[in-house]
Image: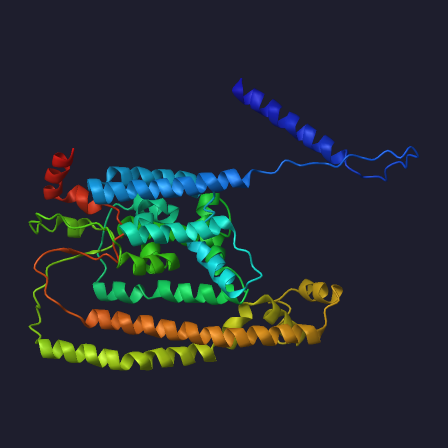
Length: 425
């Protein structure tokens, strides 16, 4: 009976829609001589202010819950339920938008182009997680971010990646971040939004290639913690910096007995095991190696900057105006760039001289900003090598605040933490 009623309702709504369509001005209206004026048609638009309030309210509320659960209560259950709510609301219901990860591009464009007005939602979703990270660590990554939450919920195994491999892979989020900023400030496009691997999953539609890529990331996330967050997320790279200086942060249980359970449970390898200088390296050798990397750091920065500068013309081909100019000059084949683009250009009265002037400005911007981006990439690579070269002794387990995503899994495995939980309760 319910199915029949549903079908009747759908047919009725379809009839109304078709009636409305044919009721539009398909023929000229009669010209009345009475001076009658047709009333203006008003269309109901969604209350974006209300949705903005709900989004920001839930964002702040859930980050507050995670901070309270991890730092005050040292328990995982609230973090788990925050992850479920985040995937359901910010993921599937809101279709992954507004996204803090993509807001990086809005902020970059607003800083570079004064004519661009950044949406308030994008600004708040960029600033608030950074503010909470500075105060409480990466509570946004714990389960408030729908992408991180989705990976967290599917994770059942934690096959550990060697630290050296993990450190090298950790450079890619910075490269992604600098390229995203480069393309945003040159008005080439928002590549983070364009190549979001999970947006198709949240919207249950989209490019088949991205859907497959997102599914593969989730498959990898089953066996190792948060591959996208650790090795791809550009916003996570920013939060990595602020979490290093956070005021309040998650800590190893004070009465730690070195049972290693927290180390094995951590999905992102953010708990460093005791280290007793196994290679028996002298202090002098360690200092010499650090000084050597420090001396070569400016060289790495310079070489990377020059390499990116030399590649600026190639990466600028992602810009629509540059591609269009190539087509006009006959440097691209019609198979790569459809002919309608040229028809649209000439049909709008565009001239090659005006197009070339715009392209010259774009190429100059790419050359300048690519140089800065390359220098920053070289700096990240140099600092990563410098960090790997430092080998200090640890007598107990320590939390790596930069990598910790405050998922609180370590607390649920720690036997000593159970005692603390019971005392708090």
